[in-house]
Length: 406
Image 1 (tube, rainbow, N blue to C red):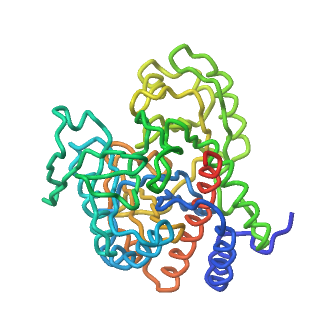
Image 2 (image 1 turned 30 degrees about the horizontal axis):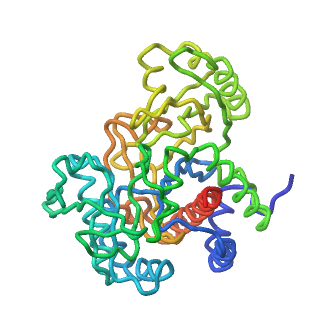
């Protein structure tokens, strides 16, 4: 099939020259969709393509963003909260419960700074009773950089979330609900964004990338772009049990089928469809590696955060990153608010090669000021533009996921 845009160089040139038209197209698609309050998208760039390889609706990493991006996002945060509740005065951030992770607390401090500088009184509010074993009203913590973090025991009164007796007008959810709280969220009147109904107790990477393929294919068709330039190929495999080995041959066949469609010496990522924090991932070059997995690797693939058992798998094309930092492989994570790109960072891992899972032991983060990636101004513009477009398309896919549960 003939495409007007058939290679990566043409794609970069086209996006830069048609930036306004492309973003208008994306913004039109977003109208009427439940775009998540914020999101982050992991993007790999190879010699042939750009492709999103993961999407997080409850991002933890605002502390890794450039200060200039944080300052620039203040008005975007304000506009987004006003869309949720025009009269909002008080925001509650619902955090994860791993309070011993001091870097995560830095993230919370940065997120709180964003909402406070946008003009809102901000509390951290949790409904995890384990954080308050003696029924305390709050706990005081200190982040890695020394920022004070006060997490308040949240209450729900007549459907309204309160903190220390004060009404919360908008709740920003930063808890991925991989271990869902026993709360009837549909009975809560206080708007919560993103909805806890799409947490990892329910969400599936397989569904997300099915929606992304739909969004990317339609985008590519509209602009006569080869859709392979903006996505990784994948297969979805259900009903696998790594403990009993049930379904491993089926999974191995899916691996071999996908590899047969890729260039020689390619690898694929086998990912737990409900995996978070880089858990439940293996990088393989044949189905035989799946079938012959040892006990230790099968245990790693069997259960994830909060003991979620992985039975649905995403077999995803391994996109070999060409991005380097200090000669180590890196990938890009773009952060968005209300479906609009507002910054990002590089994930670097000196213990992996360019085809490895960088979201694993050994990873470090570097604030993504685009000059770290490229030298020439025109390259800077093209890279920035492409990453933004890919991230925006991925977040439209996540909106279709949310639409399913509302």
